[in-house]
Amino acid sequence: MKHILFIVGSLRKNSFNRQLAKIAEDLLKDRFEISYLDFKDIPYMNQDLESRQDHMTTSQQAVFRVRQEVLKADGIWIFTPEYNQSYPGLLKNLLDWLSRPMDISNFANPTAVQGKKVTVSGAGGRNKTKSCREKLNELLEYIKMNVMKEPQTGIALGMEAWVKGEFNLTEEQINELKIQAEKFAEFLEK
Image (cartoon, helix red, strand yellow):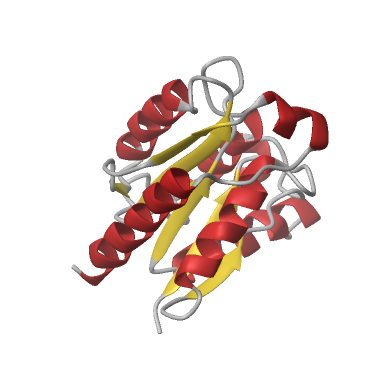
């Protein structure tokens, strides 16, 4: 059974994007092994940490663990909010670490994400995370990931969701997510 790793670009326990990921998980759980990447313990990108060779610090162990989880996945699905028309800094930090060579003795060495198949969805404001997803797709391509750009699901949350901290997808939105899930499943089989 193929494995899809979900990355949620918000650390909030019940974030809208974690809720969206749970819905996508329900759509795929019979066909794929699904897991969520826990990356809250990785440090800010720092070459001093990266190059330290005498012993692995706790921070280096966290980065190593995250890279291993990414390497084991057949595909990655990122669910992200939009912050100021872009993706969150914590997601950028994660991708910065993952885009570095696993063996820094030669920068031509492979990274954990190189060639990895990926798709993106997001729940946010009226813009449906469009700006964020466009910029994130650009970054993912730059770090040599294999990006499925279409279809991607963007959800505009209504005022009620912001007040209650939860939302319900419309039938149309569920259908969009189903189509993305199906296309991503096909993409992983290629």
